[in-house]
Image (cartoon, rainbow, N blue to C red; front, side):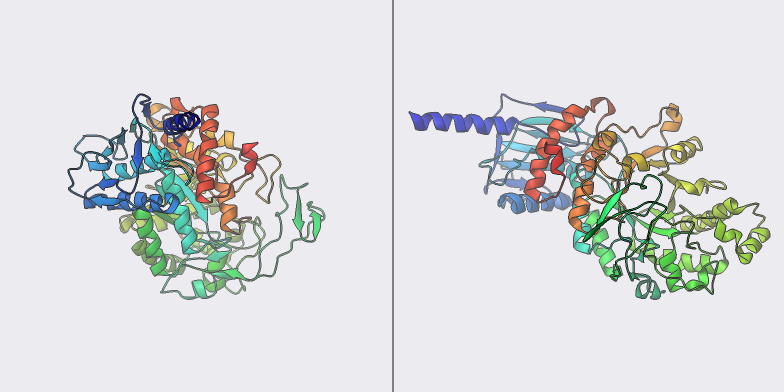
Length: 554
């Protein structure tokens, strides 16, 4: 009798587990069929899918094998009716190629969409229907009906590999994190003052010299909001204030770069996950690594430039390129190689934080302004960006730039990425330009997650609730203008992020919140419900070995 009771309780327990559905981002429409039995995945389960859906099949099979130790078969034409997972591209007419439908019962799981990309998003939802423990047995999928599609077309995440370099294996892992959250753009910040990270065969010194620096700043750069911050420099704890600040570096050589073959490998990897990589080549500022290799392109050509070891000093060192024909030809040659590597229709050219003082102090710059009828240095900024835009457009691609590209007049076809609040995105949308919202105070994940942070981060916190409650479409835009808000993006700058575990800690769970902002219907967003689902998501992260703050579990 006791064995029967235990067996009954075990079955009930399995059924409760099977009916628990906690998906992030929340689907547009979700129905749980509590009266139906669950689908059980075992070694005899078969995936039925055409060869055109190989990306989705391989992704799911690899995930199932890695975390549950189950290897399932695959067939493209089988007529089997039970214990099967069917993936099908149908002829349903839809304006949204990302849309998918998922149905499951005790006999089969069906995922259908009008595109292979939609199928892939359905697979990400199926993964979140799996048990969150590899010890779960049997592996059950609850009976559900889902119709799902994203709210925004641009769902992006950024990674800075200039301040600290991350190898190819981790970049691929990062891309997998984005795929699991149905993100579709990866903004790869490849160049900056602190390191040039992409091989350019025409200019080998960019990586021979520009990819390496002789040290990195210790602790936080003192500035607004950082006056009373303490940070630990082992074995002593030092108080930083503007008055007694001593800028120190660790003296440890740091660097690395990606070969063109490695770039191709990563681009292919992302494409199989339906993620477009947007490369960023910074100009006209944030170019210290470039200038260390080719000083003749700066406003002080006789200066000995070095790859920067500190950050936060825009007006304290000259990192601005000269707006000369020589510079433009150099950048055109660089971008020609970059565009050959990245099939993305978009190229990010930076355009931010170009201190005008260096052009003011340069006689050559002033002559360039006079020759071209430029009234001030802001117009010089616009002149620079427009020149580069014309070249990029001639290659069939579009530029994206930080909101400073609005200075002096926006280039005709440019997309604006608004980081200094929302003003730049609003202005761009009113001018009928696409805008991507990534306001620093909300969506910069290098900032701390808590008022009192456990680790070294940028000062002002960007807390989980603030990320989740962020609305990318500003209220002041009318319906027509709002159409130009393409989406939003989280940014992860790596000044204080030196290893993969710290990347994970800063990324999760704010990536979960952002994914729901960008994917789920606005009217369905509910922070308490999100927090409930997040508790289960953390268990999945435990399964996957992903680092996150345990303070969320308190």
